[in-house]
Image 1 (cartoon, helix red, strand yellow):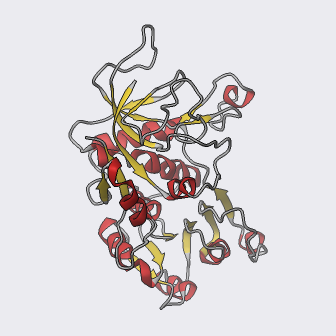
Image 2 (spheres, one colour):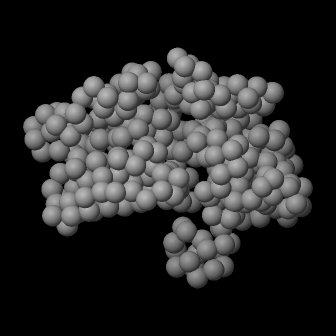
Image 3 (cartoon, one colour):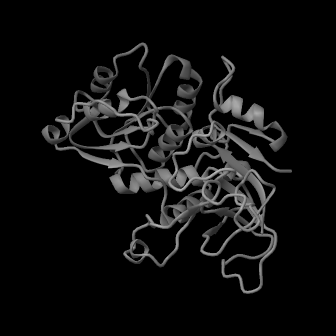
Length: 329
């Protein structure tokens, strides 16, 4: 049993609120919350989770079976995976399988990762989105000195920018719209070398100017807009890489696909984290080298969930945050 300290919120929490299912196997009703940090409250006799009572841990939201052919091949994409906060409904055992609850049941085959005591839990809940970014950047093999453009200054885009800086990227460009000014300013504080307001500047020509016409080694899409998929193909240099990680609500997207063979691009899809990237995320946070305080954003109690969701959705003009989370006291 885990006593939950904090849980981060993201766009998928908003989707759940509105009844939209985009995670494989997602059910309802369910206790939401998947960016979970807590303390081990109790252990069943014979539990083999590698942790002790009282220890602060991050919860890998993915439970892999370890028995299917996919797992046996070493792939992280288990064909029978279960996800905390999504796929284990109220009718499964205790029903307490999400981070919104003050306590949650941890099931067998769950990876728990020890976390530092020197950083507040609300900041450490960054581990889950950071693990996604680490997996993506490992796959595209971002190297020191390389250039990257990140379309979308939401919390994933900001986490990307900060991690790109940690990896030693050279030119780091974050793009957004005029309404994203708060987030674009945050991007500059987190490591972006340039930000572009696409409502006021032509994106492709501005990136070309910033890179002396070369364009970027890596173009990342983290928006929910359809146009950014194709724009990535325009922004990547000859032989460059493209990472698509922004969901478009299952809508069809038009793009100039000829740019992929003509420019020799490598296109990869961002598909969450792996067990290895979860471990690496915990290591990064425990090392204290990642800007957790600047990425904490606004923290609410469970009783303030409506306020948290409204801020996450930017329901009130002029109100914004780099990130939103819940903390249990």
